[in-house]
Length: 236
Image (cartoon, rainbow, N blue to C red; front, side, top):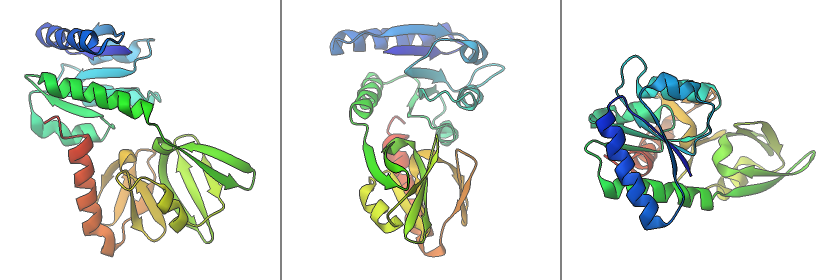
């Protein structure tokens, strides 16, 4: 596993390194760690990382700004933020952070974050659908949202849009309940790809917008909060 540790304080880089080496020895896996003292040098690196441990507050380019640059370059690495300020966690959600660990770093939570990352890789779900052009295999985590089109459904993914030859109700039954929400009769959204929302619209990380029905708003907020707590705030 290729890991980057980006923090402008050497003390915290070393503290993370100690925990990562302990994790490596206990789990008997190979870890290759690269260290960065600022976000800019990380964004300029040609190395491909599986996981990045990112300090939230850094001089010049903070953690979220660094993550935005990585995402704009289509870097899909797993980002785990580290901060002394728990109230900054919602900002991390905007750039699809996997976890948010609070300084001083809790060993159990760091280990759990890496365990969960490996479980996610091992359990990646694929769905098979029929289209006008034949059968397609779509990774569930790549689905941004689904859009009803009479008897068919358009599935918008990070790479393409597919017209699926079944209706949105049938699509809904195939998706993981904890990761997706039917926010409108015409739309199903992936919590993972939500950037922000208000009382009428959801803004997704591909910059598209879908609607929330008035009747679904309260349930949507509750489901989104549960998702954030489970996948983005259990490290707080």
